Image (tube, rainbow, N blue to C red):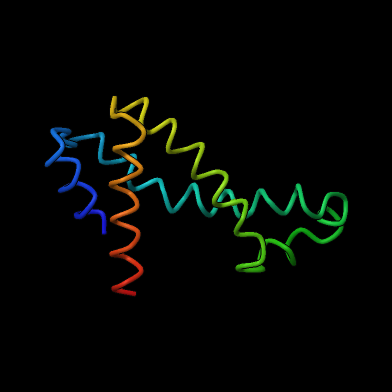
Length: 102
């Protein structure tokens, strides 16, 4: 899926190489952090009573992952100097391919 994103960006004239590829590696980490940070907002004080229990839960707070990733894409587009709409188009194609493959 990442190759699909890089090929699409290359066709649009945005060649990503070298240390700029690191931005793509951080997407899953940002998603994970966002999902975990959502626990704090959703559960509040209840989270601090037993944080380990809530941090080990897997898919219940994925809306936090989406919010964090959207902010990360703004940062990524700015740092890579790619228009946001082109970056989002490339990432959408990569996501569809990733979902199709499994």
